Image (cartoon, rainbow, N blue to C red; front, side):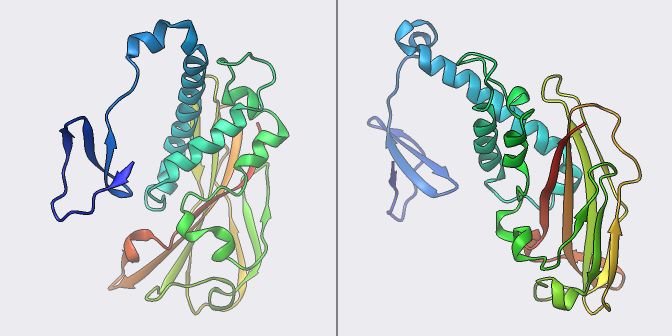
Length: 251
């Protein structure tokens, strides 16, 4: 593909060249491709069909997880979180050693320890990865979904963005059944600290555990706000906020 450099930005098709806008700007590429009916029926495209089915499963698994954690991720995700998560789900699908090519699924792959590790430490906002924002260790209770920070001082232990007056910690416990599509998430009460708060322990724990069975995800959320007249205002369109999967286990 090629970038459009002219002052006039085109969209549509001219002379076999397709002009369109993407996240990378205005692009152009030659129109082409194979007829859809041939891909669907020609034995020569068997691998293509298999890849398509498996890609669809990976994309659906990523969407299911994103939808499940939306209560925490709606103000956090970066513009490429969907493609990044689909890429990891494809790697997890490749760990399915039970089904033949074209029928491998995320549901089987994620049952393995290796599959779970691929999603542990996944950052929904790549612009604010947990490791670049929080500099104190924390403990995760895989049973309750709780997260404990034994001692934390926002000014010393957190990368505070300019303009923030408060930092808000939450934990989330989500369970996803990648076979049935059932899912549920429970979020803890927020713990709010002023950025100048004294060093203290932080304990965030969901009030209950989701009732569905599947893969359990424990997430840590860190939001930064500026409080003016008791109203929270987000900073830089939420680009500083953090949401990370800190543990993945079977439930």
